[in-house]
Length: 114
Image (cartoon, rainbow, N blue to C red; front, top):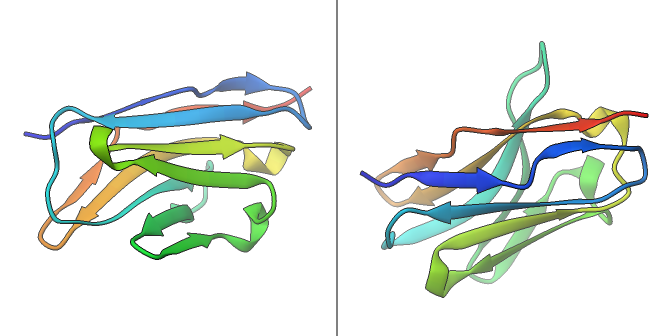
């Protein structure tokens, strides 16, 4: 059973930065996409960013502030978050999508508050 282990969440002031990491417990084959989603209280889970071979997608609300990257050899995906805003407060979930399975992390809390 593959587990996705997230780290890097926490409390940060508006304008600050955080870097989220997500590592798979073992090698995953046939990856179609790796990405990050988030869910704020009372809202649906939404895509923040994902990366496929040859393309990267960002939610409009994070373009220019967040950067997704991946290390294929380590089956690890990162999310660098800069210029954080209070509306970025949410639980952030890592996702790995293969052609047959979706894997999810347990979620890491990001709170942006002064």
